[in-house]
Amino acid sequence: MSPGDPFPVAGLEFYKDHTLGRNAQLQGGGRGHRLSQRGEGGGFGLEGQSPSDLHPLSQDLEGEWTNRGLFAGAGEEEVALRTRRGEGPVAGEDPKARIRERIWQRFGFHGLIPPFEGVGKAAERLRYLPEYRSSRRVMVPPDQAQLQVRINALMDGKELIAASPGLREGFFLIRRDLVRPRDWARALRGSNIARYGRPLPVKEIGKVDLLVTGAVAVGLNSGRIGKGKGYFDLEYMILREVGAVEEDTVIAAVVDDSQVLEEVPVAEGDVSVDIIVTPTRTLRLEHLPRPKGIRWERVPMRLIRRMKPLWELYRLRASG
Image (cartoon, rainbow, N blue to C red; front, top):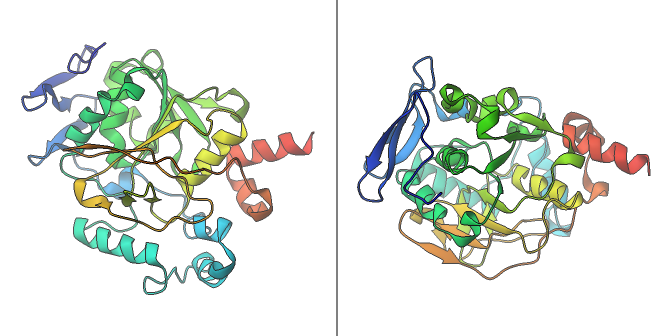
């Protein structure tokens, strides 16, 4: 199935974006939910829903750990400690935090992977990548900013792998044959993935061909800055631990042009990106080495017990 020829779905109405020959609006989904274009750039969202509604984090996990806290280098312990206490990181002391604040102020969203006008065009550009066309199983995070990417993956007949928000309930598989067409709009919301997807124990995840992620900022040096929680990095490490991804598995970041910087800090444990896709361009970057798995000595037991995939892996390791 080629881009521009979406899978026909009964009960859903498609409107062409004549710039790209693409869906500019997807209407339906039951109970009045509608995925609609916002602004000329093609941003999508669920009408009547705020960004926080679309990606709620478990309150007891909020602020408990960050990538810096789990995988911090020798000079970062104090920042990591303040982060775990809910006191930081302090933007003036952490270059990543300074970048986050600058981007969040620009978009008017804080604590999120920011949705942006033009996300529909960026998602369409992603569909033309050879790596996307040849992929069978694609992992996309539950953020609102990647909603159109998830819609495209389902329409293009791909198996969609997604983690529940905060990784609390683990990974889920969503396919066209598992979700009724009238439920697509609802099922692809991050908060509903666990309800409509099929649970995937870590041993059954299988090979993932392509990882797609959003970001707060990305650099031409292949670095990526997320919300500061480290969830995407941890998801990658779990997948790497079970052999679902390898060192050369392609990771594509879908972002706005204004989120692309010349360089962003890259720390130990950070997962780099290979391709940046924006509404106007596709950038291929130098591949940087990635974590080969989970550094268990840096993962608190309370976190292992609260995140289902970590607990499954921990028990597998304990059983030999």
